[in-house]
Amino acid sequence: IDEEDIEAVVQALRSPFITQGPAITDFESSIADYAGVKYAVAFSNGTAALHAACFAAEIGSGDEVITTPITFLASSNCVLYQGGTPVFADIDKRTYNINPDE
Image 1 (spheres, one colour):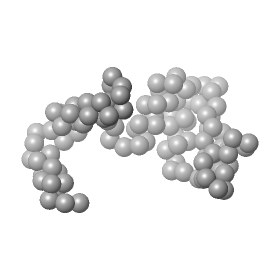
Image 2: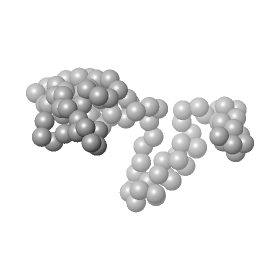
Image 3: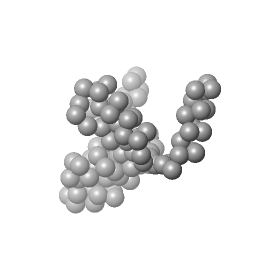
C-alpha cells in the first residue's frame, strides 16, 4: 500500500459515493476492456458475486452444483439461496482443485 492507494481511499471516503458512482463505472469499464468483453460488474464481495452467478445460471430446485467443502461457506450457500443442492467433491491433493474423478 503506497501513498497513491491511501489517497484513492481518502478521495472515495470524501466523495458522496461509497458503493456506486463514477469510480465504480470507471473500474467496471477498465475490467471489461482488460478482459476483452462488453460488460463487467463489480460486486461488494465474493459471496454476492457467487450468488449473482447462480442466479444468472438459473440454479433452482432440483439442480445440483458441484463444489468442494474445502472453501468458504459462500460456495455452497449461494446454491442453497437459489434452491439448489450443493454436491461436495473432494480436491486433488496435488492441485487443490476439485477432483473430476470424485
